Length: 420
Image 1 (tube, rainbow, N blue to C red):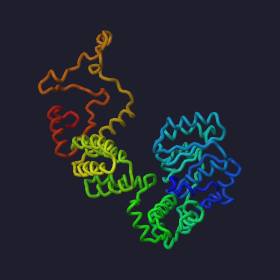
Image 2: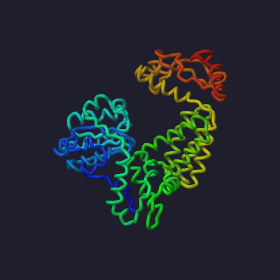
Image 3: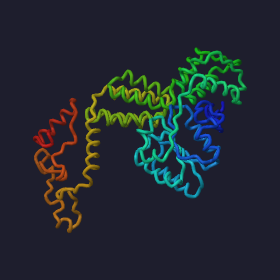
Image 4: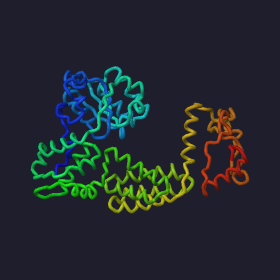
């Protein structure tokens, strides 16, 4: 079996060979003319998954023979951007392709601005989201936006026919394509997913002749694909459904979406990492044991791996889904960070400052500080916030048994301060 996926093997290298997107590939189109004369501007390719965004970026690189760098916004940061820009200073006409550019935050997108404006790099960004909302206006104004259309039935069927006719590995097998409905339906209009599903089905049949029907496609897809694409849009849809099911206290739905990811070959550490985050963000102090269990789950699955890791994940998922929920700690840090950005670096009150030197002691650093353990109940009233924001409540315990206990404790100690 060829280790390179069929979709990658079939990726065209010339604009004329691209199936679909005729408004971009026709000889009269702006993009076609720009590529042929080697004068491609910075641009954003916007369209659904699997319709040709990455393919067009690769075609541009192949046709204009320019130095070509690729980054994924999922795994790259400002450091990676700067490394490419630094290399581009010593090369001519560098093209930087950024997949899923909408996942870059403002600072990451801002890091591209100067290089794009000066022409140090030609940026090609690919996105499934409306760039008007997801790409900074300053960066967007420096790029030409091209919209890619969904692939229609005839185009998807043409991709299947082309693969069967031209791919060397598939031509060695006697494939009889009797029905295409299931292939097209399960691909969801995603050309990459369609071709890779076709290859999985052919390998799954493993007979001569290889007869493809709707029933066979459905059966093999359910067994081997689980309708889950680790690198595609469904990856994010399923992890979203998974997290929302746990947050919504539905262990049944949560363990189903867990199974979808496991059957699809999802990285066990990716799943466990998300559980650690959720245990703090969505459960928090309503059940502090949730974070302990999720952390232990993460460490355990790293050691165990599949297939047994599925049991550990299931235990953790069902426990988290069945736990009381609170996002109070999450809201508290969000509000605190927003306050820091709004107010800037407020001075630390003198009585809270460290005083390691005589000069600092002479300046009254730490002078008025009261050591809590010297007082009854290990508590004494004093101010811990800067004067500008004193008495401001940032943590509001949730309405659950555990946090009601915390609220009662805080109310007893602070006696109305902070609104407790």
